[in-house]
Amino acid sequence: MGLEIERKFLVKNNSFKQEAFKKSYIKQGFLNSDKERTVRIRILDNKGFLTIKGKSNEKGTIRFEWEKEIAVKEAQELLLLAEKTVIEKNRYYIKSKQHIFEVDEFLAENHGLIVAEVELNSENESFEKPTWVSKEVTGEVQYYNSSLSKFPFNLWA
Image (cartoon, rainbow, N blue to C red; front, side, top):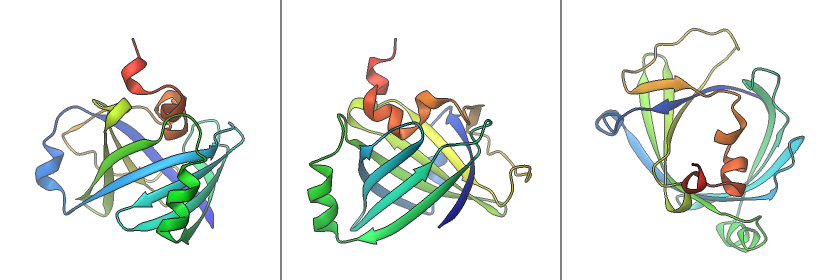
């Protein structure tokens, strides 16, 4: 439990895949995607999680996050109660100096969207952007997973 501080970027090509030291499959849905709070169910490889996130600050970089591991069977059952679109994605983990970038390659209704996130210790912490990172989308609500579950990338004009 604590504050999550992160920045989010679009990815311009697939070269990040050669730098990845790990790849995971994620399936997740939202039981509540209200702008004041989200309640997410996630299956990450062979583990289940229940996550509650608070509202982001004005810049979209900081918000409260609480997460608890739950049984995969429970996560599968809770996903049946999820709002509209269940999100599926491959997540790649890439080390860049002292940071780890998590790159989400979305599948199904969000296919074609690739977003990188880096978690920081403070809002103003400096970090080196990899060459495959492009436009920053931190705080742009349409790139939040909770928004992508309601208005998937394949519906964007």
